[in-house]
Image (tube, rainbow, N blue to C red):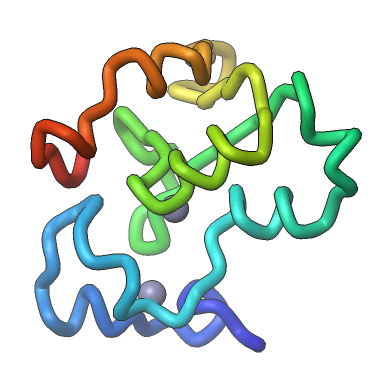
Length: 113
Ligand SMILES: [Zn+2]
Ligand SMILES: [Zn+2]
């Protein structure tokens, strides 16, 4: 099925939903979820995930890109150990997934990023 980036339209944008919120209304399967469902469990455990966010409108790297709350919980339960997020052509942030477990924003009602 085509993603919003293929259709050039996203219902979240139409509804002006803030970044990081209410992804359940969007038809797209996130890159993290696609990666997780494409690999067997033993390849997930202790693995690294590389993430690049590209803004559909400007084609620039998404600033402070991060996984959404749905993807974070899947990454945690998939057993992925580390997430690399591209900030610029040459710079990446490294996230230890254990930090998402230790600093559980879902318990504090933090949405978005
Ligand atoms: Zn969408
Ligand atoms: Zn996501």
